[in-house]
Length: 451
Image 1 (tube, one colour):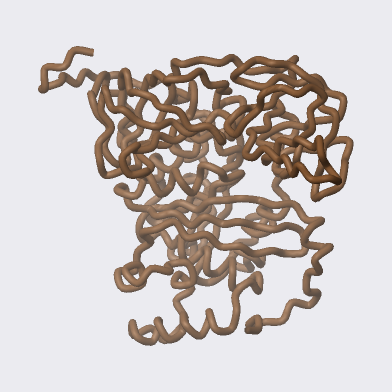
Image 2: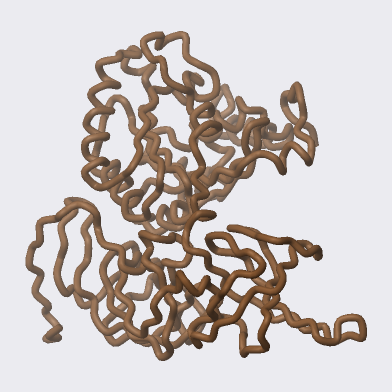
């Protein structure tokens, strides 16, 4: 398979390994042109293959279109292509000379809020699309609210279809001002507004000749240059133990290592560490990375840690610096997004998976449910159904070392699992609450339960 347009300088393995990685998610209302933007981004950055383009051209002709519909590059499900909408989260991987990307194209429909949460949960940046003719609408506010709740560090407001409003600067300025004010109130830390036409390619990869009044970056330029605060390297150091390595060979008779991917921070040989939840302390005597000893290792690296003392460590334990250990608790309060069709109710017995540890738990209370339509809080709803976002209180059978989601998006997150069939029920963020003060309206229970 060959590229539709040969890159002038193909990236070598060394170049790819030297570039940083940006995870970003796209979100937008129905017919805002989100999939077209993603398709244009992939096409104009020379990141699609000949057979992919041919498949899109064929599907476009079958729909009576004269030109390729670039939205079909991301709408991979047959139902998506037939209906012309995005249903599932589509992941795409591409790279330029400056950066590597993992793109999560998320649905815009209200009933797929859970899909957006899934796509944005690991994103460093979210691109929120707005139709320039419609401006900021209810679904736009929902997307901003989810981005704020998930603490996505960077948000791009892509004001699309500028060609349909005559490329008017005043239209763009009004939308950018309204969205920025709203998102800032929710606690979104950084917002960049870019006027684009995904269909025509204006300001997607190349600067637009139709909007000389705009002096900012194109979408791709911003994606390539936005700071990726893999500040996780500077966060509280955390290593969830995934596997205990004991070869017990003649060459390594006493080798005992604890393998896993570093979730946050940096570990160094000689550092004093604590193993949780037991609380036992020891010193790192060695770190193996790709089979070779190193003096230090940091976030996202998969390593094997050797400890100076022979203490009991098993899968699910958490190795942390002794001077920076999180508290252990059996009572977890969190904001969650319910993703299963089966409702989550008070008294629900579940499995809670945090890092590499899975424990039995019970839902003790559901204090409130957030309505994204008007950002109101409904007290004590008694249950959460698919796509609901709410607060829960959970009691675990065993103590867990948990961080606040505000401190670490990796070790402050968890999922609830149905113990009967292993279905994921709910995605949770420890200690997280909605950023902006919200009006509260009463919602009485009709089932007689008093919480």
